[in-house]
Image (cartoon, rainbow over all chains, first blue to last red; front, side, top):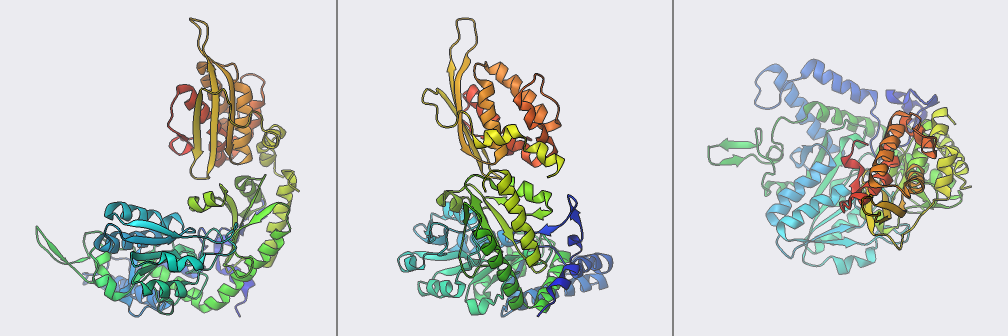
Length: 410
Length: 157
């Protein structure tokens, strides 16, 4: 088992005070902090190997290419992809989902086809599908949530009625950024496969927290961001099954993705180059590979157990506060809690907690339709990662109690 | 609690947040405008009745109310605003807003002694300025009879 206390010293940013208090960073669902090895990998690449990749015949370009392609293989191994060519580097989850929607959706969707989503999707797994539905005449359909506070997750009993032959795509989040629900990804994929729908998983909230094996899950696409798994911002990946990727048209044109260019037409390289027009984000990809090493050294089973235990502890401590409304499952949950009070607004809570050195997030969490359905405009969210401790949760709960008292809520 | 924080959450603000004045739809309203703050989800609707003045005189706000949801700053600001704008002309309302805007962005004292000064603490929290001005934007739009929802995203404040 990792020495969780010692892990803190791997993250330089944590060693600071905010408003005179030790920083307690509980905004990990928005972005995680980066360990020193990741920061060093970035600096080392720029200081020693920086060059453009591919086509280069000089030493630095070959080094940069090896490092970039090595990172691709490393990321592929991280999620157990069958082939590194199944990993397309993107800016993050959002761009990865847009890529599938524009390329696969643009080539395959017909009027009358259905894109099945769920009511708990982040805007990044909702708006790209709205855009492609408008372009192609496809329709959107939603798997409903279960329970007034989403305590039941998705209403799986509705799947039979929803997964009709018109469904061409089933896109869903692995872990909800708003409720902490962990969806049964493998089950959903196998159900979708029965009607011939392709599956697209938003892995933004799962990738850094749970063991992810795309072949066990059985998905066609899996999208994720580096910055939510101890890696840099500006880099993420789309996993896609090779057979699907090779049949998909490019979605952006430019250098690096062509095999032959004429004045009036061009031919494309296979995946992954076909989907990576222009100079890629080499340094951040290399550092993402190092983040994979870092998380695997801790062990993702261990990380999942640690984050989940902190979330359940926080849930328990918060559940006794008068008037609190906690979203999501009562039992097993991912590493976050999300809650609302009738009389104290999330932004007032976040401002007060900041005075205690605690970083929280308040708002709709890019989940406006779900908020509306739940009769909320915002929640406060505390989200945990490898460096957070049970003591920090005590400080957070005490801070929250003071805030409620100040606003006359308790 | 830090001095900045106690400046932000003045008693006047807490009081308006707990017991908002003129909250709810105004049955006699002849103008309505909505404001929203997309980044945080705050919403505010302002209902007002503009009464025609005697010939040669400008219209005046006969009555007004607000409704919505949001943080203590946004709700208290909208509530206090409704108490300040009653009886004012559009030009007077605009001038009052300019004064309020200066208070929340610079922390300066109000031109005349008024509860608006309670919002001076907002200036130390730049991210919250848009909370304090949301209701005002909606009210000014209602006065202009501008049906476009006021959004704090397109304003620098």
